[in-house]
Length: 178
Image (cartoon, rainbow, N blue to C red; front, side, top):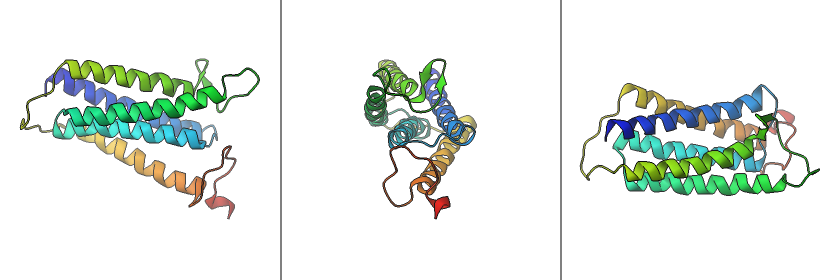
């Protein structure tokens, strides 16, 4: 894999890890529990990150980029739905704003940028089949960061929602209210 493409994939994994960490910051530092649409956006961010991790681990492949694009489109759908729920003046918003936009608005923008970035990476070329690839230490560390964040998200989602459907406007953790 060309060094620039590998670096771009590594930056994407680290950037998505930062996005997931920021979501946890909103959840734990500000006490803003994620709604069901927020959880779907986190899943989409995790899936896009896994596509980039697979590129780092196994080399850039069109199937990996396809996963990223599909996950980003899924994320755009979830975040776009949430934007539409709160676009009408007086309808309120969900969560805190960062630089004037709420997390779901930023998510919509980021998913669009991910699709654009993957298109650019595809234009840069995909290595021939059978090309061996050995991920470096930064790529391995970034992969473990994303995997740890996804596992933590699964645990905290279960603690919040339990084995039932998550409430539309969560106010407490299901496990702690039992």
